[in-house]
Amino acid sequence: MLNEIDLDAANSRLTGVVRRTPVLRSRLLDDALGAEIYLKAEHLQRTGAFKFRGAFNAIAALDSNIRARGIITYSSGNHAQAIARAAQIFQIPATVVMPDDAPTSKRQATESYGATVVLYDRYTERREDVAAAVLADYNLTLIPPFDHLDVIAGQSTCARELFEESGPLDHLIVPVGGGGLISGCALAAHRVNPKCRVVGVEPEAGNDVQLSLQQGQIVEIEVPDTIADGQQTTAPGTHTFAIMQQRVAEIVTVTDNQILDGMDHLFRIQKQVVEPSGACALAALLADKTQIAGGRVGVILSGGNISPERFIDLMGSR
Image (cartoon, rainbow, N blue to C red; front, side):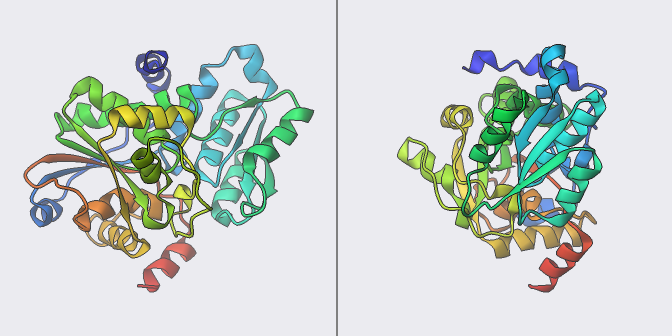
């Protein structure tokens, strides 16, 4: 399967389309952690998250006749916005199945790009079933948020850019939902430096990937209760699980309070507003969940789609 994921084709499709996001540095952070930390600022990507990479690549890879019929996906927010914007660029219709408790700001952004939003109850309905019902009536192409080879290939360009700017890295710390980002990043990292240790970070309440890797099979959990709405997945994908088994060294978890510590640090020290999922990887370093002392460490800040009201509410809850 790894041979079917074309990292170079994805890079070619995305060059000049995605934003080459900056890599942030901080002497204070380096001193506090005893390592060289390189923060890949994907919260500054188009549509506010890394998801635009995979969404655009997957749509671009389609045959033009198939693409013209339209796209359907399901997402709590960031992939939804990415698909909607990419579809808008290609001037094709997009339908997005979103949970009815998704952040209002993410739903509004998705609709602002012209997508049709179909709501469902994530606690009583399966988004896959809702999407399948729509597919039965319309001849659309499904592009899921993470378990798709072209989506994974698109996400790989995030780590590719990071390595090009930072140089060799000993560790790469990546937030994990369904595994699309870490799968792509791990493939890119392995190509540059097979010895680079790739570590995933999940919310403590939503450790489906950690459990799956520990048990050697996909484990499905209940919808996790966490502030990290971008990581409320219940199981890894078939493709992403297989890649993570081969290329990811470890999955660690952080509490919601530790995620808030990461958001707080990024706001106070880096002057960056990042959503909970986007701060998850840095939270693991601040909480000393990984052994990175003396190393050169890449960290993916995966997204920044959070409303001012929500950000203020979370910061005030500390």
